[in-house]
Length: 302
Image 1 (cartoon, rainbow, N blue to C red):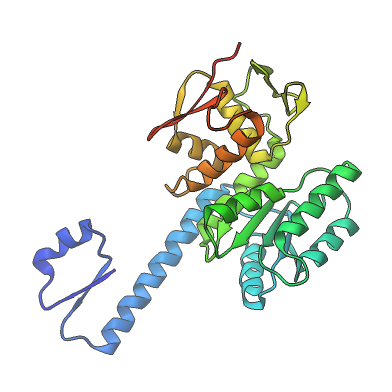
Image 2 (image 1 turned 135 degrees about the vertical axis):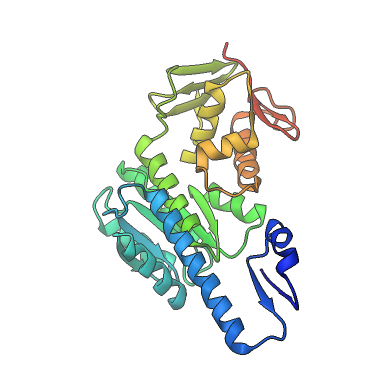
């Protein structure tokens, strides 16, 4: 934010406290405005670079293979440039059907992560994800993290992405830091496969629900429950702290990392999906309870 005034020195400190980034003295001149904007852009780029380095840690580059599925040429070019700077090799697909064919043609575990646009011609991201998940199941392949990319952030869109088998959801336009955070989170979930280092109890059991952490297995009345990686991580975190109330912010930081924003919509969508899968009546839950305005609590282990 840029503040314009004839004399701003007396209010400078107060203005900074409310979020003003720079000052311009009146009368305005084009050259002054240009210089201030250039300085702000430079500062932002340096900040994002610093945050990106912090996110990646000592391994500022990674050698993973990324599949980028995007039908917009400009978006493809921008994302490809970013991933390349991080040291990743990028393969491109321009629609969902092409993405499915690439996955079929590559060996198991070839892609470290897939970034999938939602709205595309021929085959959209939802259907492409469903077909990739079916392929993994049929051929016994390792599950590849798939991150949805969309300009829509409505809860029904996010929920539809998770139901299709996607692991995370990022809204366009997205910044460098947010994108890096999603990469790191998805890869961490993939490598851990739900066996978080904080989990010490091999099995959680409550009523008709059982979680086997070592086998990465959830059953309800003896029948297998299919959860996404994020859903299993959420349920596992709650189960390991059964009987305790975990706040929204604590859960989001544990699952998505410290750089996730404060909007807990993504958490609510995931929890609603979990309840539909493990509760006989989601409106009257027996296993996972909402502490309104605070967070969630899981019933204590039997």
